[in-house]
Amino acid sequence: MCDILDDGHIRKLAEMVRGRYGLDFGPDRWRDLRQAVQNFHTDCDRFSSAEECLEYILSTGVSSRDLEMFINRLTIGETYFFRDPQALDVLEREVLRGMNGRGSGMGGAVRIWSMACATGEEPYTMAMICRRSNIRSEIIGTDIDSMALAKAAEGCYRKWSFRTGSMAFRDMYFRSTGPNGFLLDKSIRGMVALSRFNLIGDEVPSSFMNMDIVLCRNVLMYFSNSGVDKVLGKIWSSLAPGGLLVVTPSESALVSSRGRFEPVLHDQVTFFRKNEGYVPESLYPAFSVQEGSDSEAPYAEVCSYESGAGFCLGESDFEDPAGNFMHEESSGYFESRSENDSEVSPAECNDCLAEAARLQQNGEEEKALALLRNEIERGGRASEASVYFAMAGILADTGRLEEAAKCCEHAIDIDQIVSEFHFLMGQIRELQGRTEQALAELRNAVFLDPAFIMAHVLMGNIFVEQNDYPSAVRHFRIALQELEVLDAVEIVPYSDGTTAAGLISMVGVVQRSLA
Image 1: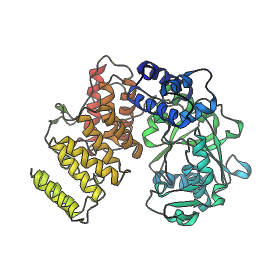
Image 2 (image 1 turned 180 degrees about the vertical axis):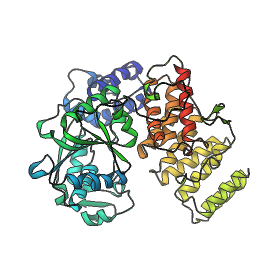
Image 3 (image 1 turned 45 degrees about the vertical axis):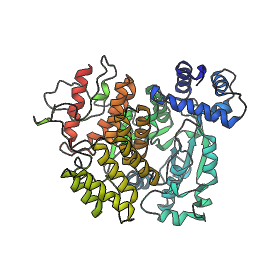
Image 4 (image 1 turned 90 degrees about the vertical axis):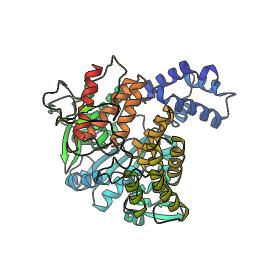
């Protein structure tokens, strides 16, 4: 790569993106910035080289349209209908129906703002919910990506946008346009007003004020700390008194740590209410701290480091809150699973996979691999992706990382939306020393499952090793937020049998070592 795409120039680009748009591109993501410059150069066909293209992007003469087109290549614009159905069900039953006819809109309509709506699946989901519950509503969907909004306006979607268990809503509100195409009913599209909006750079227009509900899901975690503050400030100003902010569980810590919004629990789902009189008990997300610990504040408070130490499960002995020592074990990928760990593979209960797990537990890895290979060759009942995933786990546990990576690649090629596949690939790449590839796979895992605790922990470890402490703190904080909702004795999935309390205790050890 030529000099202008070296670290110094990419750092300037990262600072510009952070300053104007609040998007956090630390050194681990500079590869993404370089790729975006290359793609923009190729697509525009106006520059003689990527270097000239970057020089233009960083110049004062860059047009707002060109800058938007470039930024669109950096934002994640993927979502799907009825994402997080439990939260949406609670929102419909416990909130929307109670607000019906008493909202801040015309005639008591409930005013709803879907931020960063990409191609429109979220605001259209809210429209379908309001239609089936006869809720009078005014719904706005915004995004920084004009092209994504144009697709949203068309209302044409592929099967990728339908990933929930029930397809009843698709049968009711969509018309098939081919084997992989579905057109949303015009009446639902007419319920949503779409508009371009930059969460950082744009002032909130008067038409966005007095919102009863603001959905900002899977958005805050990608902003810098200052970016989070700006976005939350705009949400606060846009909400009507008593209005609710909806975020994902993984982002709850980012809201509660600011101490402004009042957390409100509805049937095990937390929303955040605009309450001018709310006085928080703490400026940090709560989680259990072992009695007698010298940790005085949750891990989110740790924002500066004097050491590059991180924590890695199994590297050394730790003492759990009950006083028992947890030693490094040679337990494998299957051996570490608990009875509650139901997400190991889509076909976990299949006889072939269960037998392979039993063989590995007995130290008969070659027999297990032979059984799985035979399952693929004969086209057996087990999902092919799940079999490759199981093989990858066994191979990784026995140190055959290249073979493991190939099997994991096969699993991902077959089914790209299983977070566990990407997590295992991230582990393999990290063991191979391919850090950037590991981070890319782990980002895929937490995008598909924002509450994937160990993916956040592993990313935090990697960032600590890279001295990128703000990114490490962010991912450890998200992990702690998810640990908070687990029982103390519950085994954390993919953690080599560590309990939630044990993992929190380990974080305490890191706190003290980095203080």
